[in-house]
Every structure is written in C-alpha cells, then in structure tokens.
Image 1: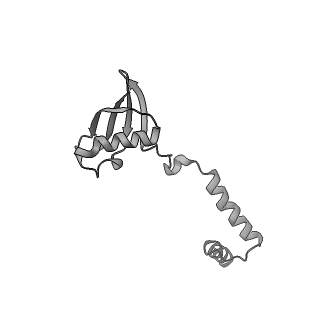
Image 2: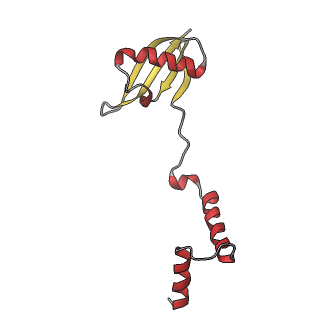
Length: 119
C-alpha cells in the first residue's frame, strides 16, 4: 500500500475530514446506508413479544401466557392474585382466575406462567 492510500485509509478510519467536505458526506452516506439497508436478520434483532399474551381459548376458558419476570419475585401464595390483577389491568376484562400453571423447562427453570381465566 502506498503512502497516499495508507494516509487516506487512516483519515477515513479516524474520521479526519472537515464537515461539509465531499469525503465527510460520503462517509455519512455510507453509515446511513448501513443503518437503513442492513437486513434485520443479520443481527438477529427481532421484535420481542409482549410480556403477557392472550392465547386461543380452551374449553371456555381464556388462556394468557405471562412472562416469568412478571411473577417470579412474588411469593407463590400471592401469584394468583397478582396475575389476575395484571390481566384485568392489561386487558380490561372482568374475568376470574381459574388456574395458574407454572411452566418449567428441562432444567426445572421457570419459563413462564399459563393463566386460565373464566367469566
């Protein structure tokens, strides 16, 4: 690499161009193109689902999936009332909690909660 190319590369990497010069504008255009044209899948950046989701109804009960972060810090005796309260606040429906099931993975870590609600 010649001295001029090394100097140009060094100035590019260190952003050593005055504002409003054509080199500065090209660098900004490259950065913006990278931001807006890079596919989301390259970085595995997918939108996260809501922390509480209503699932298809089963046997007349409305079923809600609740992420573990919402209930794990709460004592087990109070989880039912807290889950019912959160569902009422989030969805505005006056339902009664019929059953709260804790879902575990293979290592017995809590993956979430299933709340079965009835009118």
